[in-house]
Length: 386
Ligand code: AMP
Image 1 (cartoon, rainbow, N blue to C red):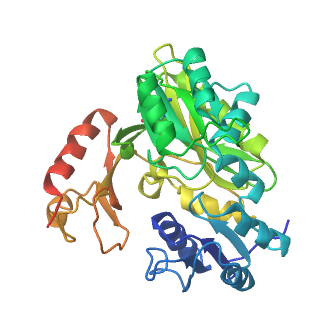
Image 2: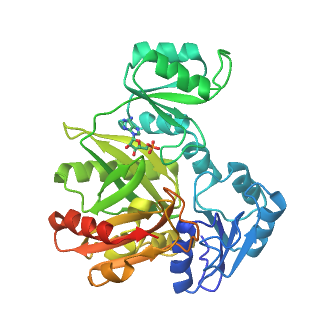
Image 3: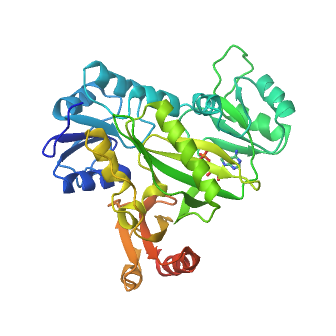
């Protein structure tokens, strides 16, 4: 295993906020960074040494990114697996591999993969036709979540259905025909009455060492992450079980780099896996301020063949996402929230504060998580767009 030393170039497919925070950590460590993103002046492009402005499936541009990089990674999981495969076929070092992406880009394969490890997932069934939907309604029942197998994120490509009519309507909207020989395009998933949504960041290096960050407790609004609290307020056995799950997933995926496992905690203490993200994750942003080594630094270390660092929590924290709301592009109230020395602001350099667009986040370092929600509420009261 060769080490990609500081001074070498990291290529990032995708130029969003995850790429930006990754680039900032990589730059601090002395790496050069180049990103590929179709949008000019992308959040990562603003802080990288260079940006190639092109589509993710532009083979020539992807090849150019490969030529100019010593190691490559991606910052969102919907980059075409084919682009990662081209890079691999050209002998480029890409982490995580396209094999990982092929599983995690496809909800059906991902759920089968997790279930085959003996890890709990909500009951599910692949849907290729309206007939399959009827069968799933009989087997799994309502309420259910219908999810497109590929392309969805943050609740996009998802429908909560309570009746056969609603299910039919959702399947027709997605053009799922009556042709039973078609490839499954959606899954029917049992709606789970969870008590908490939690997630855990893992990092695995090329030698196979897996380290896990503390369990995080997440709340979502309109399917988008709203706040993350760490450490999660759960029994020690739940934290241990989550570590076991995250470790098993990392080992069997053979992933190199940082990944996140989102889970539902049930009333009886069981954990069911919802999703795997093969990259740094929104619920791990707190690690920039509250851990000795952030998820982004550990990703850089893992993909460059450097030792990964045990995730040490320096402080409890709450992370609050700052979303656009369509009412203006200037964030008002920054000076008020920064009066509190426990508050750290991260903005992603996006100009257009469209509704629900992730514009930044705030991390509040707290003595005790019991004070976290009140502090987060205060931050929210002061911040607005105008
Ligand atoms: P996803 O895109 O799969 O992460 O789903 C977005 C959000 O929808 C999750 O964070 C949950 O709040 C909710 N959700 C997804 N799947 C289920 C489920 N099976 N039961 C209940 N809620 C769910």
